Length: 374
Image 1: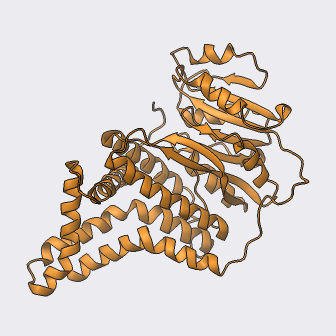
Image 2 (image 1 turned 180 degrees about the horizontal axis):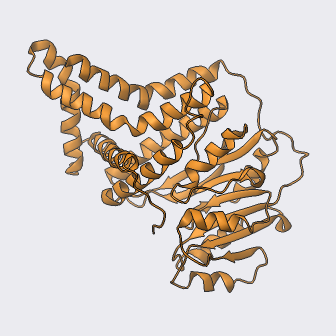
Image 3 (image 1 turned 135 degrees about the vertical axis):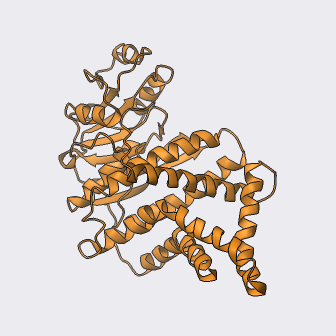
């Protein structure tokens, strides 16, 4: 049982520390050419796709944020895809006197992804940029994204999404810690040419590579996989800054984590050949380490914690082996109680995220589907 507990601990250590350390070592021995260096390339036309549902309060400000970005006026289209809004969002968009802004609304509301599929069929840009109504772009965002596409081997771009916190509570700070590590992993994978993930709030793809997406899976999962599946690279553009708000309500964070895990679990397994190390060894290594095994990390966490509880009764050696797990459980409990003890919110947030992973994976395996959501 000691081996059982130790195995779980080291699996977690690899996923949340060892993997990024290994990527750093690989990058030190890897020489990659700088993408986007060809400044003589023609400026591509871009369509910024903002998919919305009842965003009347903020949609005009969001559109103005995109219009304020530095880009050639004749090369920019802002396409608002309204997934059956009922609060006047559509009327606000129609009322804007700017030829660069257009509205698409499907005849029937079948969910965000289905709306995106239909809207993209009407888009005019060579580059499709996916984003949300709550996101804000840095003024140079569009230029930085387009610049990366100067490299003909680049098929998709992941922007550098930064989260702003409305409160300084422990949950928000801890989520910020994990997100900083996520961005670091993406940058390293990008440099190695093995990245196959992206943020739906600031992601771009060549329109020529776009494939209609499964309605029950999110674009942030499918687009990167489609890009690498067609032999092109996904690149993380750390100068293409976008901003969003960090969720600080544990219940909302849990529900979001469940939904994202469910959709992404099913979407990733729909590309089994990319997960096959014999066919795509580098991409498979990244997908298993960065996605699949992370979603399964609740199993490793349970191995570690249950094993720790059992081995504590097995003498002095068992007590030593159990001590880290017992301390972690106490820290997570104190974090759930919102007690001001250093480090406990990190343990609680870790458990919260893993609970969401666990429920999402179980629902995914059982065949649950999510298409329409608010």
